[in-house]
Length: 168
Image 1 (cartoon, helix red, strand yellow):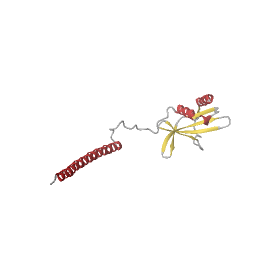
Image 2 (cartoon, one colour; image 1 turned 90 degrees about the vertical axis):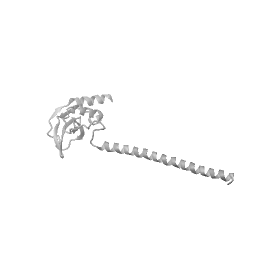
Image 3 (cartoon, rainbow, N blue to C red; image 1 turned 135 degrees about the vertical axis):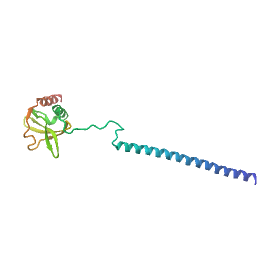
Image 4 (cartoon, one colour; image 1 turned 30 degrees about the horizontal axis):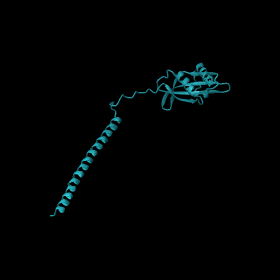
C-alpha cells in the first residue's frame, strides 16, 4: 500500500469514527432533551390534576356564599348605584324605599326591596333584587311586584341626586 492510500484510508476511517462519535453525541443529546421535555410535561399534568382536585393544597378553601344573606347596607348600596347612574333620577323631588323582604323567584327565594322616586312630571318604581347581601338586579317594577311594599321616606337619595346635579 502506498503512503497516499494509507493516508486516504486513515482519513476515511477517522471520519467514520468521528461520525460515530458525533452521531453518538446527537443521540445522547436527543435522549436527554426528550427526558427533560417528558419531565416538564409530567409536572404540568400533575399541576393540572392537582388544580382540579378537591384537595386544599394550593390555597385557602373557597368561602361558602349565602345567597339569602340579609342586605344590611341596602340604602348605602342604592346611593352607590345612584352615583354611577345619576341620569335616571335627575330632578327627583321625593324618594321612598321599602325594607328588604324575601320573595320567591322561580324555585329560589331572594331578598328584594322597592324604590319609588317622584320627579316633576314622572314617577319611577324600581325593584332591587339582592344576592348575598348586595344588589344583584336593579330593574323596573312591573305589574304588582311592588304594590304591597311598605315604603319609608328616603330623603338621602334626593340629597345625593341634588349634590350630583350641582357638580355638573
